[in-house]
Amino acid sequence: MTIDTAKKTSFYIANAFSTNRFGGNPATVVFLQDELPDAELAGIAQNFNQPVTTFIYPPTTPNDESSDTASFRIRWFITTAELPLCGHGTLAAAGIIFSVPGLVPPNVKALRLEGKHNTLFARQADDKVEITLSSGDLEKVSAEETERVAEVIGRAIGDVKVNSVLKGASEAWKKFVVIEVEENGKDDLANRQVDSNIFVRLSYFLLLPVRTSWFAEYGAHPLSQLETNYPSNIVTARSNDPKVAFVSRVFHGAFEDPVCGAAHGLMVPYWSEKLGFGDDQVAAKQVSQRAGDLRVKWDKGANTIALAGHTVITMSGHMLL
Image: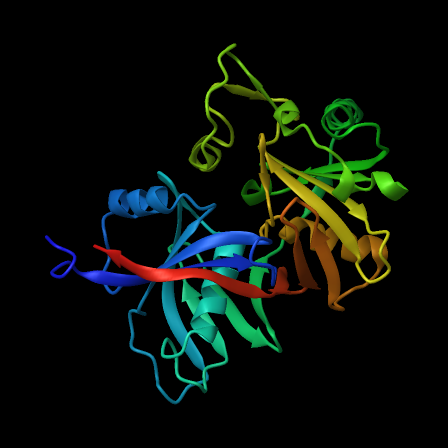
């Protein structure tokens, strides 16, 4: 096979929830006409080495050219593991589909994205893209667990007041813990130097490289002990900025997620009830080093959240198959 005879397909890399070429959460988006073996999809994801690689396929039933909604199939991979869902990977893919000429007719304003386990929806929302994800319920933890988690947070991010510790209430959310802390002037969540290694204590003295695929398969480094007992730690606070409802940082073990769409499935209902913004759309910000800006809204009756954000394409090209 030579470069002239090889089958080619298009790929893009885009940052979700940002207009900054060096901000938000990056994702590779690969457009395929036919299914490839899972091992090959994982290998492609490993070659790109981005937080996620989203694969987009044509729908099982051809699209109606006159409809304002187009359908695609979607899958998400990180290195050797397939994800059941990825919020930022979905937003990045939708942003590319809407912005690259020729991918959908000009009349298309909404997308139906059919995954293996769920169907997601995306739409154009002014200069942003909005996706709809499931929301989840939280439940209290014991006083002893609250104290233990608060102690870990103190070691990881420094002296901070922990207002509450809540965990995901259902099977789908059992790996998540939500820790509300108090913002404190210049020592706010964005400016804190976090030692994320505190969240994971390795069982061996040799520190092995941590690959994100381990978090999907095991919830943590395979030789680790989770200090909070939760693979995904959501640290959130009411924002000091009157234009932003709440801020957050998300740690999957020692890995900080630049902008985690799925985590907002727990945060948006929590802050909606606490701050009383109901089903109004408000601003939220994930204050990692790359940072991301979101517009969020909770539909309590439907158990869904809407996440809106910008996307920016940073790279594009052709991949040889």
